[in-house]
Amino acid sequence: MEITKLIFLELPDNFKSYDLYWHLKKLEGAKITSILSDYEEVSFIFFDYRNIEFQIFHMGAYRSGHFEFSVKDKNCSDSLLTRLQNTFSNY
Image (cartoon, rainbow, N blue to C red; front, side):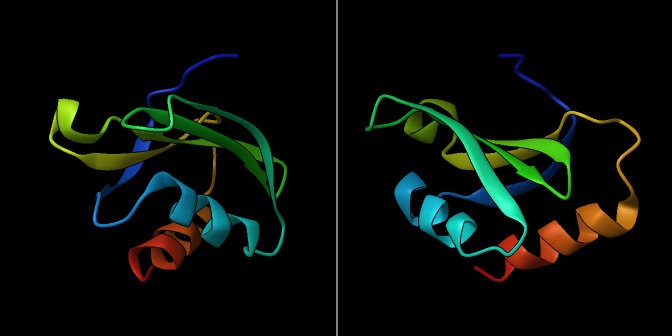
C-alpha cells in the first residue's frame, strides 16, 4: 500500500478518527478500502471516491494533532477536491 503525500486538506483533530470513519461511510460514492490504526493516536483511512484513491492520515498529539487528506492521482480535478473539502470542512 503506497502512502501518498499530495495533501489537499488539513483539519484540526477536534474529533476522533472513528467519527471521521462513520462520516465517510455516509458519503455517497465513497468506499473505504483499508484502515491502519493503533486505535490511539495514529491512523490511516484509505478510500475510493468516484474511482480515485484518497487517504486520511491522523498522527494525533505526536504531530500537532490534525488530519491530512491526500489524493493519489495528481490529475484529480479541482472540482472533486473542492467537493471533498466542503464535505469534511463542514463536519
